[in-house]
Image (cartoon, rainbow, N blue to C red):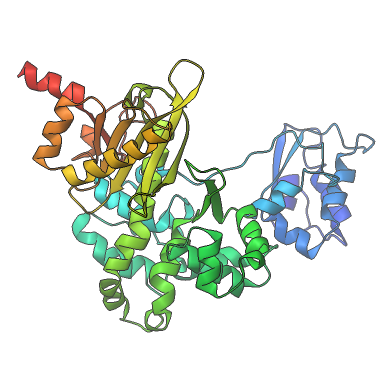
Length: 449
């Protein structure tokens, strides 16, 4: 507001009695001039204080308004996803008035690694498992502090994330507070804590909280509407689904920070807390995050020939083994079109971050495939994908060289080794990504040598 008079060439600052005057003046700011963009940021908070603001803007955009033909492009911005979505829905005042509705998602793993300028793949993935892809966390919330490499990561977490004087320290708590639909923040944080602890089904969340499952319908719906969690159908059983936290920082907060909050608020305790939390970090934070990245890679980045068809959906799934009275989890289940117009199970995969994958992991996938074949869900052509952040045994490499249905996918030794098939675009960039190792190409190289 202070710069507005200077822009308009006014000798004195504006003094508006109400929003009608302010919006009317705003829509006249480009009179007799070039097209001008006007931005109102944090719009949900303004509407919370002045509920009539959308209606006032509607009147300003009405065809009968005197300044309708002025070249002002009004952008309304806000981080409360559900609120911004309702601005243009149903009988909302601004329904039908918008010429653009743009939802800005967070950066995916590849773009986040490039944005953080982390070229070492393991460091990039571990960092992404904590801060996700929110651009503001790169500079504003960490003051530009970036882990220098693998040897610096364990020092970076206490000084940049677990440091009570850094804005990132309490950010996970504030994310819920800024959502207008969330009133009982304690309940919603408890639901998120249950999911972060590994409870993906509504029944498991209810047991964790000591509540009835039916009483969680509303908080789960609200968390899904505000984009805090996702609700994904099981790959093999449509009547079964899983809840997952969409923001990595929230998962990290509930798994690592919240249980030790008292210690973390006291200076100098962060390194000890971080040391104690290593096992939890790997199992509750990194493990699920790696599985999600593998699913995203399979859905959006892998070439169709990698899976043997055009991918239509990717999810995790549970396969019951009645004979053994147990169940098996497929971290990645890839469905797609093989060319005949029908959907088929193209591949199933297992993802491990800190384990060297061997024949035992492959046998588990084969066993799952066998169970699915008996249910006519899979075929012998269904491929087996092994995703590893650590590598594979020589025996598994040998089997993959002789079996085209076995695919080994791991991290590249450096960004320079990225395969263009794996890149979001064919141009090389400083990004951390998974590297596809196709057995047939590897066998061809061996024969060529």
